Length: 390
View (tube, rainbow, N blue to C red):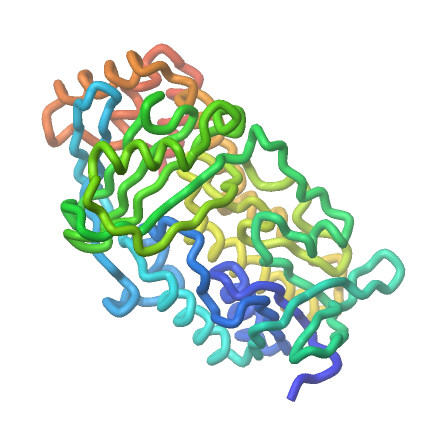
């Protein structure tokens, strides 16, 4: 039975929302999670790639939610030159439907209550402070009061907008992305493939993330300006016709991916944003699973501490902890992204040719970025901060 009031209400049961709920509940406060879809983890709007370390900070690796283990990175230049880079740390291609279920189960095990098909359509206020949510459930309009609302409702974050937080993003900072899951193809299941150049994904990149030797997530993201000239779907269709004409398409998704640093404000009285809602996405790669879990865990921890100390203003500690953990690092990634996404095909070809001259033991992602940015000394400092410091 739902109560009329909870300490914390979390909107959204993705990785960020589930971790926010779990870390708050583990501290003993009451937590309710409201998920608009009927199933946690569905529909899947993700390439499903993540590092092993990013997973194991929060949940042990389990074969039931790992489609394949990745230990190589393939960089394909516009002229077809391919550079294979061994990864220093393993990665995974997940089965997100199963993975998100498992994360939600850890939140439930910690004491959080979870409702699906609960559509949040408004906020409650006490003056300028958020103190609950309005939502539709089982055909009825309901209201639940709470001391804090954590909005983990995705990139559009209507909840954050209702609270007065500026969640708008300029279309030029949003990559237009499209992805299919294709079968009846041939890929190496231990390698993620990245294609760069005007033919594949201008101001972005094209990816193939294998789920086994015959199936993969295949997609791309292009810069907002580029989508006006040719749609992301057109680039994808052209690639598939050329490379995998006999493929069967099992799923197709499309949407916007924010490739910008974290929002300036992710907290207001009584509300916190986490995950995509806060733009806690790696601006360079567009990946947000691990960073979303980190953001959610910090939000849930700080929210619970605020409740237990009876200090509503303590929620602003969240911004500091996030920036110390990943926010500042994402600013560096954003500068690196801006330095490479406007490269010409000739520059990408030159990077591949230079990398192929390196001894195999020196073909690391850090060294490839150093090669790419050899004429950009300020960005080389950023690369050093990311790849060569702890």
